[in-house]
Amino acid sequence: MIGVKDTLLALQALGAWYRSERVQIPYIGVTGSVGKTTTREMIAAALSVSRRTYSTKGNANSQTGVPITVTETPEDAEIGVIEMGISEFGEMPRISAVVQCDMAVVTIIGISHIANLGSQENIMKEKLHILDGMRRGGALILNGDDPLLKDITRERLSAYGIPNAKDVRILFYGTGDNADIRAEHVTETGGCAEFDILFRESVLPQEGEKRAHIRLMVPGTHMMLNALAAAAAACLNGVKLEDAVRGLEQFEPLSGRGKITVKDGITIINDAYNAAPQSMMAGLKVLNSQDVPGRRIAVLADMLELGPDEERYHRETGSFLACETPRIDLVLLYGSLAGKIAEGIREAGGRQQIFLYDDRERLAEDLKAMVRKGDAVFFKGSNSMKLAAIAEQMCAG
Image (cartoon, rainbow, N blue to C red; front, side):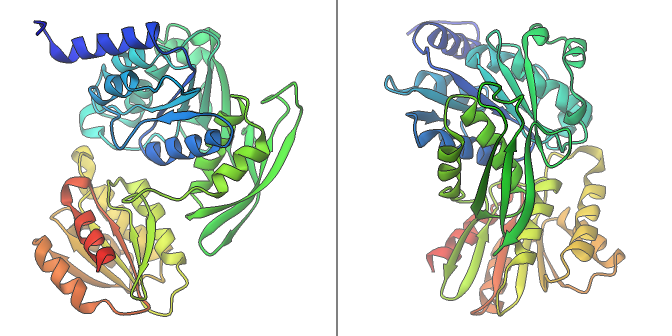
């Protein structure tokens, strides 16, 4: 046994030493309020077509999970994709010193953990400290459609106290004119996005402008942005665009993160691993787009750690459901905050039939009794609300 003053700091110091001394492959760090895990897995899918790729397993993206992930890097890996999550001030600088990434991807600045961090601006600043441990000459790939990230410059990074900001190459992905990696000619087939990926000449100057067509298997047009980030990260690490597209077209979502299962004629969308307003709204759009002969049923639970405005965020989600996803027929709500979703639906004039629950077992029993062949059922809520257990039970039959 070795005695230390702080076991967490000792673990992180061990991870940083291991990265410096034992792991010489490039690391791509992934962070953001929403979409970290899916983007991480999409990057791995795009890379794995031609590179031996190691990525974070499960949800090991924390102050303890990150150093353990680093020390478990296989000797034969050629590149790594490391998910990096934070919930409080000071956490990102610590894990960035462990990962020492060569490239960083930031997905969306939302309101997850806003109760601890105070504002979206603070959330963005903390997440951008992913660059603190970045090696010189690294690239920062940002969501150019995000209202906060789209205005990031080297000067702003320096103002945030990021030490190596002058050496960072900044690239944007998205659908607007500011995007270096852009989606064009976007259509939707069966709820899945189909589009062209355009790389401006500035992305890969030695290759010039590049374009490829892609059709995703994962539902939701919001997945298009994750795919753009993945294609950029892969190609900047030597993967051909056509190979990256091939890997992304074969990508399927993880359980609990939008995975669709059809069981006994019922379409089950398990997106219940966690929830924030942006991800819940995106998932509701997926449910709304389902072409099924029966009803579209949303099973929603509390979204936690949203701070003093949590009730407003839930009401706004309800208003969105009423106005933007009118094909949803039934809404089953579990939890005290989820009741505010019902208020938002009613205030916006939604016609959905609403059921409120304070008992998860009773919800599960009622859902089992009311669902029938041809229906589509969508599950979304914070992980501690445990809606995933109901979804998994339905999938198992």
